[in-house]
Length: 181
Length: 127
Image (cartoon, rainbow over all chains, first blue to last red; front, side, top):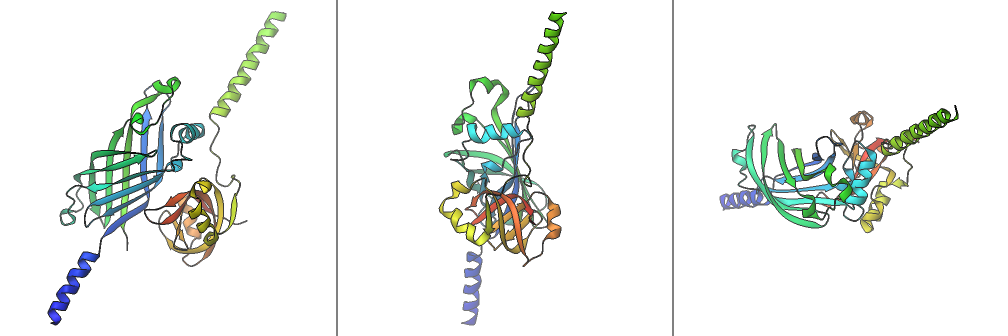
């Protein structure tokens, strides 16, 4: 009887415990520069990201106003004209790391496919890209690059500046996730 | 004689206009220390206000008072529900768990993934 109870207890607690790794200060950058013109790039180091290592589910949340541009005026235009961040204050990603297996996960960098839904300016698009993950001293490093087109998310680039902004925006993520205790 | 004076006058006006335009286009970011405080009070009073109308509070500069419940390498958690990311990690030296502090920072939004209010550009504020 006692053995059955112990076994049941172990099963229940292992089902119940989801291991989550999180960061509140993840680095998300994007670049939309065109050569010979002024660089168009910004950094957001306040990204929240959560990875569930039990099932590979991954979610990230960015506040658009936390993107920092070197040129203050560019930051203003980005928020007011392009992103309408008063109305759409967040950009989110909800998806999973495909075939994530915590057992195989070690301090060597491994490539995984990451897929899910990216929502910017209220518009959701499915994206799929590769991410490099590794676990060093119980900190999970997640890096990925992918590109999006402004028109996919209803980001309108006026004709005057169209030549100065790249047709595809390169997005780079670099997160260090700590175990949530 | 008159013609060259006019020319010099035009050049000077042109130069001044160019300088002014440059200064406007490339005006520096306002530092958190320079920015005016739009709300000052207890973090526990502020949180319910933000949960009711989050868009209204975005980008607001606030000075909030609360207890430090945890510290990490980038900032502190106040009252277990408000995360303040420091502008500069040097601020960490001034922090201790269970201390009551006043923090000046910018509200960037309510993080519904982790269910906490998030501030950035935070500094320890002493009036």
